[in-house]
Length: 252
Length: 353
Ligand SMILES: Cc1ncc(C[n+]2csc(CCOP(=O)(O)OP(=O)(O)O)c2C)c(N)n1
Ligand code: SF4
Figure 1: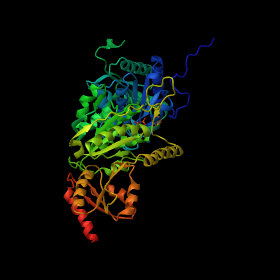
Figure 2 (figure 1 turned 180 degrees about the vertical axis):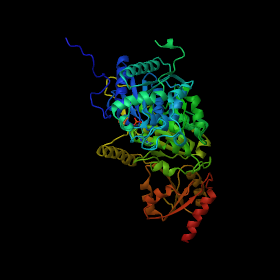
Figure 3 (figure 1 turned 90 degrees about the horizontal axis):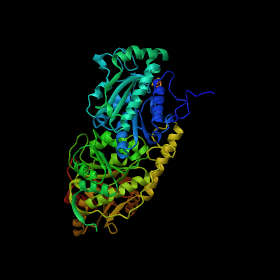
Figure 4 (figure 1 turned 45 degrees about the horizontal axis):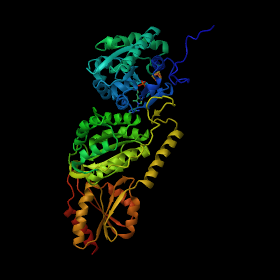
């Protein structure tokens, strides 16, 4: 007897994605779909897609969805959740989307303690528009708009979103994970599951920051990109939980 | 039995929305519309609704996007600078074909401008406002009672066309107290919103979006939107004509200015000058035909606005060169008085003598 050990999550459409080889978005989509399946909540889930490489996430995840304007997903999620508190609402946002143009929206959604889950994909560049500097671009990192390498005097410092949002009273769960290795991916899934569980239990705002490979934007191979996450990104963006529910026990 | 209550225009807007079944409001404070959110912040919870003071007008309009997409009747209100910030979201709402109601209690601009009444946002309201090829349906009340009626209608129209509807008021209407009646409407079945995002249970999933990367698809989408605007022009035009049948001169004005013009017309008629008024109630779709018809009968149309000439462009399109179009405007929060209007009409009359 053959036993299936690996299959496409039910919440994923059976189509190839448009992502570049080695891109982290596909991995994170899959984790999202697996978590939706495992909680059996597909019919209650509403997603908000960002502007960025993952704008077409709705072509891959089979649930009700909105497509937001650049940076505004948390406000749309707020409007939806206020109308239907019983739905499970998530936003999926890149680092240009969430950490630059949409900083006000994410800070205040967290401040209000909106009971939503945010998947924040930090790949240190603007992927979709061609690899420009992002607010998360590392010091010294060359991009198409920081051709000399990011210098703090000229371009300021990379922003640590998870640490910043963790200071907000309204945020319940804030964590940073990575998808550069199988081991990291397993931990990332655990964090994402916890984030959704917090929403399902009505405990408030949860955000998972994913460090994610963008080989195209970084101008290196997929293998080099996973190494770059390990060697360059993680030292500046440490992995771990920055805020957990006041009583971890409140999770069933 | 409904009875009359004495209420300001702003509070009347809030109450009318509630009576029309609106249970969600998202906004940000700005004068002279603050009493709308203040009123709704205590009234909405009383009726099981939800009021959120957003971090900005940008966030507020996207909360409206989210709530409208989730199938709710939803309202936001603001004034000039705040409406400017909302324009991005309004474009997305029009593109995604979501029904909602937006109130602009106009104040003087540009920039921070002032906080007193004006009609400076006519272009912004009627010609799109944000990016892309789209229109709002725009209703311009001139009394508090009419504001109540139009706010209620606005929700029905928004649902009917799956389009944002703007109520274009000014600071006068917002702050003025008048006795109004909230007439019980024949309870209509609300239109089913089977496109809304509610969780994909026992149905294909819903998707609310505005991105069409394929130019042929985007053109089809643009044409579909355009068809709605043509339908609005065919079925939704509202206009009041006042003493026009024997008029030799027509005043064109909307909102507060139309009210003042009526007083001027009374005085002019006592002096023996036959003047009438054409008052657009929908400024998009604009009553071009009324102006076309009028221009067959009179030689002079005087447009009066609290701007330096915005609606006049639409009046000219309607008149199409068949009558002379004159203009009088006050700006910055200054309001044209009836004797100023009388004087302008006198000037037209003299120039013909
Ligand atoms: C208001 C607005 N400004 C700019 C853009 C152009 N734009 C599209 S995607 C993008 C950057 C997205 O980068 P990020 O959020 O990091 O996501 P990634 O593509 O890297 O996944 C920009 C600037 C836009 N669509 N809208
Ligand atoms: S540009 Fe980067 S983020 Fe975008 S699909 Fe390619 S690898 Fe992924």
